[in-house]
Image 1 (cartoon, rainbow over the protein chains, first blue to last red):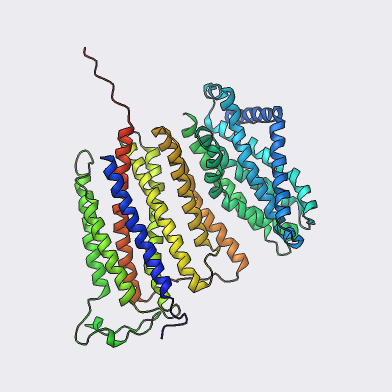
Image 2: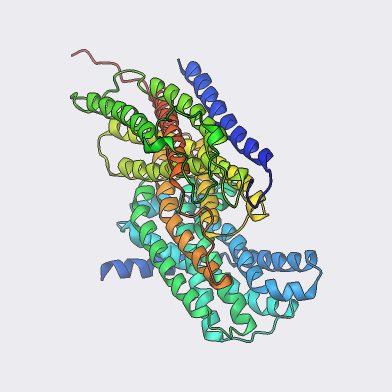
Length: 38
Length: 224
Length: 289
């Protein structure tokens, strides 16, 4: 029994993926920028 | 009190300047008229126009404020009058209040001039209390002018200011916009449920915050 | 040993015993959180202690890097918990798992915003120019990371709202003030981008940040008032009654996000400081007397 809302896994994946893209993307940009400054 | 005297002098100077540049000021009025007309042309349905009349008034005032706030500092920077103002032994708070009051008066005049046109073109009968509507308009214009005067000083000195002022000002104006347009729309519809007075009270609160904090911060910007 | 029994989730369904092998007790969620909190916050305290006990507060080393790595690892683990281990929500089904990525982003976004306002005030009230530079760099970092988290919060919130409420967006107090808050940050960052002179940039953006800061509660209040006029009852989306079996996972993810964000803030502030130093004019040559 999954509750009133059936399925919806694509939303879950979209949300987690977005979080990871932002986190990894920003970390990468920080790393690139700190290399420039040096 | 000396401060009040300074503020009064500042307001007088501002109003005099605006009066001498009334061609520019009337440009602001026609800009608001243009916005009102453009919205009317884009929204074909007359019932919908009736409903959005209140909100449209405030959009027009807000967009006009971006022009008038820019212009209020343009004079100083164009003519080199800023140095004169800085040399004047005046408290920055007086400069702030003087400019902000003057800006509010400009917006008020524009609003009161646009209002009859709006009511006519949008076929919007004004069913509610006129004094409350007037209070709403005064308080709304004040709530836009106050933070706008502070931000205007910042953006007038920065490059790309024509886009920066709206960008910085609009988030600050959201509560005032919400309260004013809600109150205006309800008043135009007759306000059977008396929702306007609480909104006007909220506008008073908003004004209290947005007149006091910028006044305290103005000195930091002004000395540059 | 009570943790070995399958919990009956108030807001979730009962975990089937097939999920957990019999005879093996899962470590309780609260002890996992406790260990992580002890390690993470303890580390921060140690670093803070090392920094502040010296006469000139100088950061010892790139302290944020281990914390960041730990945070990312925790985030992966926490997301794993959220995806596979957490019970599904009673009304929202599997979609309820989004809260483990949305709510931490929201909390952290608001923390960044608060920090930005605090740093702005710190900048405006300090007299020492070097300290002022530090505050300014910290504020810049908080603004940028805040925009990042704010946009993430809005996106994941929309992804959350679509299946649960049926709409991508709605004008309730929290969403509206979140949007206004993020927009204010964006404005401050853009202002910083166009002003060349470092002193002016710092002062003006500090003023703009403080204005934005006092604006948020006002926006929240006014939209709440408006919503109360339109809807007789306020909706409690994602209410506070989160079942314990889900709550510890939420806190775990939130801590992970917090550590990652602290890493972002520190690294970004470092970059900002270095840029400001590069912009400083050369010191005047010594005059031989």
